[in-house]
Length: 236
Image (cartoon, rainbow, N blue to C red; front, side, top):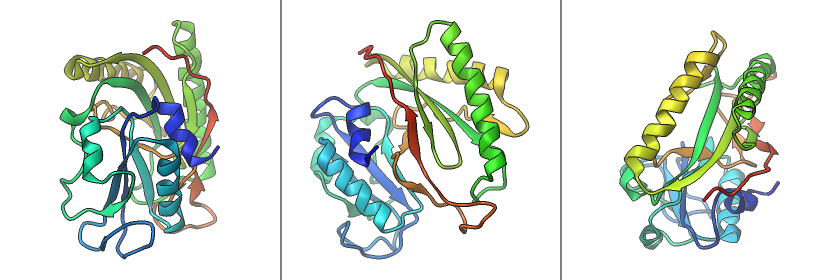
């Protein structure tokens, strides 16, 4: 799967999303400006080709993490940085919750419990996959459509398509309640169902890019994120 496919998987043609990367400290041909101030590079994209080119550029620059706004963004924000990347002059120069058009996705982020700032071990990742399988089967039994299943690098994502909901407060509230219920039922001492990923402007890993937390070691390697299963029913 190419990074450009991420746009087509999550968005309709012409919809806008932000790409954002953290932990950068130099200039690079992939973006405009010097990233040493905030460490953030960002841009807004309305097509798969430019989206993929930007994500690939950040990957080549070895960005610690490359993300996109999971829900579609107000198309007017394209004028901030239209189909190009630039270094952010302020940390606030990014998409806020009020800039989201609708709630479209339920992100179930299964993160391994480990010290902050380092990558997961193979055993930790396997534990996350085990919890993901349990949630997948339980949700399937409740009649939910099949989610996008992805490995984020250090954990597992189950991303469920929801009917587009322009009522951001109600939509994000529904997502929050669902995550709390899943966390109560399935969080363990080794794997956490992240209950904080309910906000409208939530960022998600650009699959096909590498998760680089801490140093790459044999025990805790950097891994390329990828989609395992992307059958999605359009409920919009």
